[in-house]
Length: 112
Image (cartoon, rainbow, N blue to C red; front, top):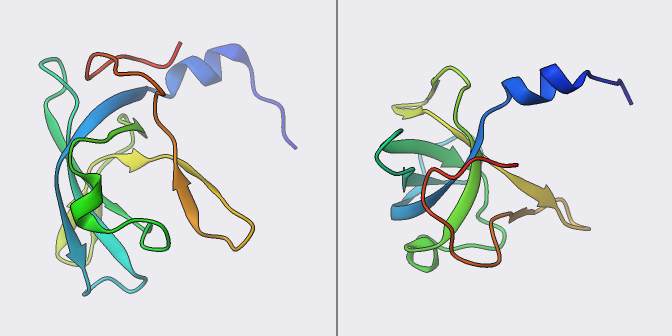
């Protein structure tokens, strides 16, 4: 495992946001869900294409708070632009389990 300095860590902007809309993304190369996430007044709504279909259906994600890296450059994923990277851990089968706060926090709150 490569070490990084604390200043490197501080450059990664991880924020919490609330999923406002989620739709299947069957056109993606790998199964994915399109997300529209509200990061509050400072950042606003951002989009993400997330490969989370192993544990999640679009209709179960609305209102859920998730953690995401918000300062990566946008990526074109097929016909959809992914502006943030939603964070999660792989389970024993390699399926992603989302991470987020266990209590409600303000949208846009930064990981401390």
